[in-house]
Length: 124
Image (cartoon, rainbow, N blue to C red; front, side, top):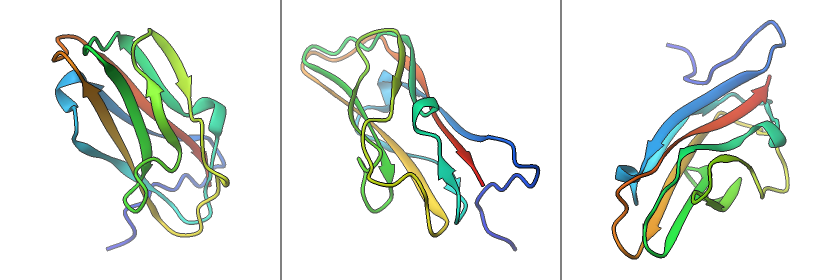
């Protein structure tokens, strides 16, 4: 059995994509695995908010790895419709197969709306 990481042999941009909703609050969601040697494309990666998250105080998203949950993005705003790009990470290259995670963090009055898509674009 081979590695779990997605590798595209034709030098195209590949994507990990995961839908999120307000019901995912506090859950560490595994998006998939980026293969060793891949480069994440920062401006294309992040979260696209389709429906505003409406918790009373905090509506944010962290994107990271199994080892560091906010390595690529810390507290991306989910309170406005649109695309919010990754905001962190010293390096966008991975040296080993890397599990990517996304964690919705909502606080205050319980949210009743909110959905979006987390996207990680990368090249091998």
